Image (cartoon, rainbow, N blue to C red):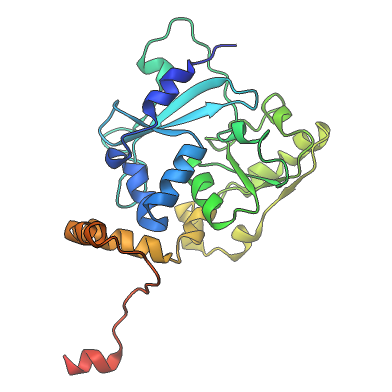
Length: 261
């Protein structure tokens, strides 16, 4: 089985100031927490496109199976699809000869170290990162595609673990069919269907996932981060005065204050 050298992974674990995904995540949960999670999940910065991210797929035994390069919009957090879908693989970019990609779950390398939590599986790597912040009682992994890694070989890494599948809207039926695969492999798995049941038609049409619902409520650090992105001078003030965030609320003017203006 082909693998990528660990040194290549290490070389990407920097440059977060120019990483669009990092900027988006930091604007929601703060820079320190964003960096902690990016390092935890081994998410690096790629030079393939300006602002690009590389999601390293590292198996439970520590082998780097591959690196998926993607470009996100730093403000919306959406994948850049124009003028073409910005997605590639490290082995393709480097033209590694005779390299055969054998994918594993994004975040799989955490399984041997986090044994006391049930495993929750989502489609998007970005969603796994954000969900870890909001719902740390689970170990979040990502398939990296609608049904990628939901196959008999890949799920062997989940044996002995309690698993919950958390599909995107409109993918619930497809993921429900995968429960038989887990059952046949002796893995206890359940399907989280609450999103599908509570979603509006518009949300289903947009294909939202659990992260879209989780980030609907801003955290204090995220609000401050967004303020600093809009006004870089605020960052300089915070650094110069060594200010510590104690409490912050998103300002919403009252009717009385609007009338007084």
